Image 1 (cartoon, rainbow, N blue to C red):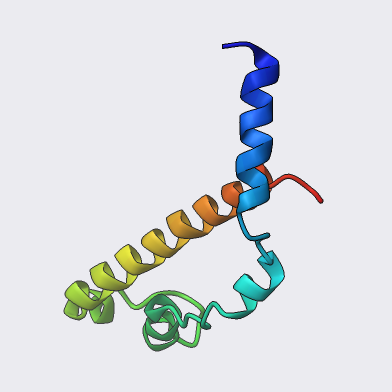
Image 2 (image 1 turned 180 degrees about the vertical axis):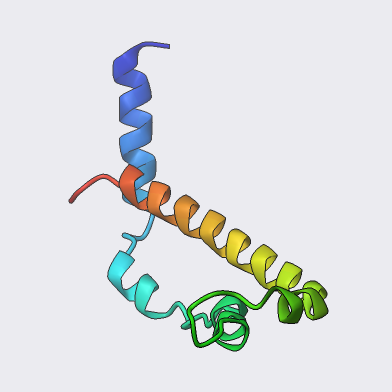
Length: 89
């Protein structure tokens, strides 16, 4: 297949798609409150250090909060990469 045919097909397909309103889509994304921040507020003492005993007692909650934050970071990186791939209008 020649490059011009491939380009023509891609251009035709792109005309059929409804334009993506990125700003509107981003505004519809609900705010996410990560548990890790609330948990850190509870586990960090007056000296600004994490209380290791308190953290150990809440280990399952800490692990879940860390996993949630990591998943959110991964999804954010994927969204950023998708936005970078968008062609400007």
